[in-house]
Image (cartoon, rainbow, N blue to C red; front, side, top):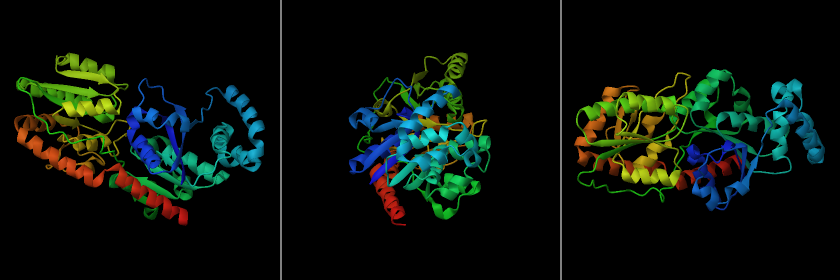
Amino acid sequence: MKIAILVTEFPKLSETFILNQITDLLEKGHEVTIFALCASHENKIHSDVKKYNLLQLTSYINIPAKRIDRFIKAIFLVISNFHKGPIKILKSINIFKYREEAFSLNLLYYLITFLGSEFDIIHSHFGPNGIIGAYLKEIGIPGKYLTNFHGYDVNSYPRIKGEDTYKNLFKVGDIFFANTNFTKQRLIQLGCIDSKIIILPVGLNLDRYKFIDRERQRNQPLTILSVGRLVEKKGHEYAIKAIKKIINLNKDIVYYIAGNGPMKKTLEKLIADLEITSYVKLLGAAEQNEVYDLYKKSDIFVLPSITASDGDCEGQALVIQEAQATGLPVISTFHNGIPEGLLDGVSGFLVNEKDVDALAERITYLIDHPEMRQKMGVEGRHFVESNYDIKLLNQKLICVYEKVLKR
């Protein structure tokens, strides 16, 4: 099959779930082209990007920010591409139908990038990119259109753009993937019909996430780990406050947070104010191999996610499955789709959002009960093998592709 993957930014370290899907589709012999609105500005690049030559498979839409630059470049694009699809180009600048998307010339830029190519499947990740796909379908770019919803696109985005922001997408699109049942119910609330929605979690390559039978060295601190961008919804501040309580109990621990983001200075100040700089370390952004090394060296994984003030929430939180795959017990929160991604009381513990005391109590329990950490680690590995193996999930994905192509 010829498959187009439409994303916002590529490559992006925090979106390894998209990378995993792309590389496995390539491994299965499918022809994949990546379309991105812009290139990543991150300093680190995942090793698979180089291994699979993914930058050579990527086309960037790159719409100029300044209107005058956008207009001048558009004239050149129209002249050089008009012969490829004159009717499609004229449709893309129909301001009466597409209003701002046509007037801003955004739609023309989307179209030109796809013009002259043919795909069986156009698979968009995140709802806003699905909207772009819906425009392309209406203009006349052939193919079946599928959209993956992940989290913010069903929570904070509709609050900003309006609850009917996906009305046309739900009408025009062929299939919509929800990573959890929570996301599916939110899609239904937003107006998508049940029959168009398929629950398909994002997965991971278990060949790269080996189970680790951990044995702590004597006189070594127990290591607690969080992985996630430094943004409000990750709830890092509550874990930091819980660590302060645990340190007061004279527990020998160190807490690492891998990730970067706008809350870095706020968290650094919190750590300094609590006088725990020797116990809590912000490591910055880490690519997948570096994250795996952190999993190997850790004893407990914590992701205290919350609903952010702008309504942003987690979707699936794949790092929870990554941690379980390596045999780490997980402590997280009763938050959106997270309870579907671990077995509470079996492979980890769930506490209420922002409950610092409960976080501290559960972490302390696992510190004091190494046999429970081991047992939960084994159960977590089995759970992930059964539900989040990217190879099995991509087989299901390909079955969906084949079924929708037969319609």
